[in-house]
Image (cartoon, rainbow, N blue to C red; front, side, top):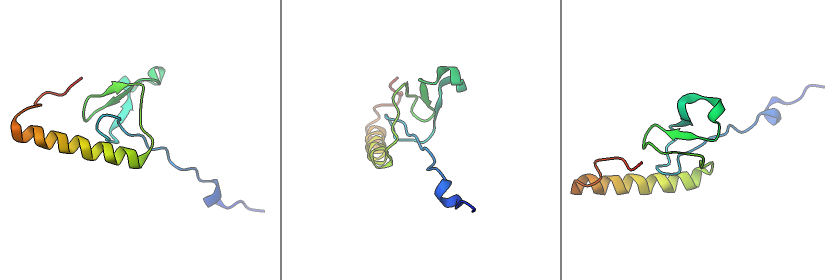
Length: 82
């Protein structure tokens, strides 16, 4: 009796940055020993908290981009808050 592979497939875990909603987030320094520290290569976030809810990440991303678009127009926020 063969098992259906589609039933065995697990959903791929997608993680997002809690500051900017980017998927460009990795273990800090690339070391699994620091498994609790994540680093976003887009906004510079570094911390233990990550987002796994894609709908929430989409809202975070929209707000982040809107904020930075407005800051670019006014000339404020040229540095990343870390």
